Amino acid sequence: MPSDDETFESVRREPDPVAQGRRATELLNIYQRRTAELARLRREAMRRLQTERGMSYAAIADAFGLSKGRIGQLIQAGPPVERALFGLGPISIAVPLRGSPDRTLPVFASEDALAADRLAALLRDLAFEVERVSIPVDGRWQPAGDVVAICGPKSSAVSAHALEADPLLRFHERDGRWVIEDRADGRSYGSPLDDDPPDRSADIAYLGRLPVDGGTMLLIAGVHALGSLGAVDYLINHLAELYRVVGTGPFSMVTASRHHGERVIHSEALCPPRVHQ
Image (cartoon, rainbow, N blue to C red; front, side, top):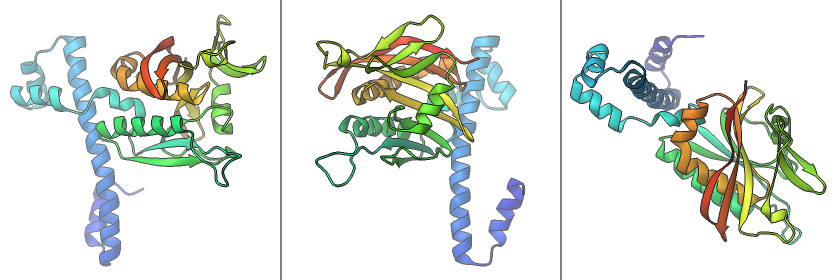
């Protein structure tokens, strides 16, 4: 594999202007993603030096070869360290298409579409490139790169297989309703939407990072589509806190949310995030 310098020089020497322009664009995209990640890593290193070693801005500046004022700027303005929860980017947001007896073509659930929109806005605020991926009605798809899937085990075999490997939580159907069960103590979490009578203003969701072929996938799986919307709201409002607990490792948790229509009124951790060992 050629080094970065060799790749750069090969683009400079490329005689064909079309190929040169295309390769330069690809390389710029790679460099931009790496620049964002390097800036995040530097900011996290500064934070760790402050919290773990008690170093002052002046001491960090001296160690990094920068001015004290520049260190203060970087700590305040650099990419947030919790950005790493999603990977390096670009990020694909995968949402399932659903068949409808009233329509010839499959459609997205409105709650899933809104959840994807809100998640995309968060990711763009974190300086990620974002693309959408449609999961076919038959659920056959293959995650590639850094992926956030808003899709439960009912809609995708990929989600179902990933969830089966979770050592802490089990997402399965029991007595005609889907529940999320703690494998350690047997505690079961069900959606208020499935209660008798149903509470149509509340739902729950699975949220976790799980291994898949070739990498990992951040999985958001509401027991109903409303729960996925609540899980995205939890991510938006608790991202830094979640990252401090789980870092970049595999984890899982259960979120609960209350809604007014499709508007999330409140979201919280019903089963707290735990890192997989």
